[in-house]
Image (cartoon, rainbow, N blue to C red):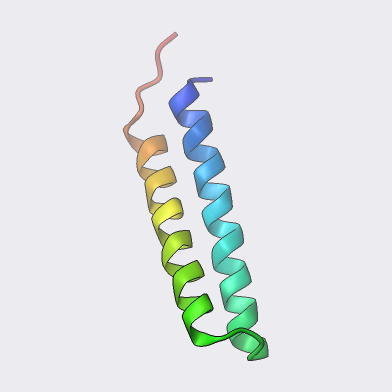
Length: 61
């Protein structure tokens, strides 16, 4: 497996975990608005970057 694809997968998983955390905190009304906005934005950045790395990396044998 290519190193870029592995890093993209890791970023995507971190982004998904962050988005799930943000969603759970919003539903429970447990976090402050500023914290949830920052975590949500960072998670979206990680998720989109990971997906683009996976998508744009060519498989080479």
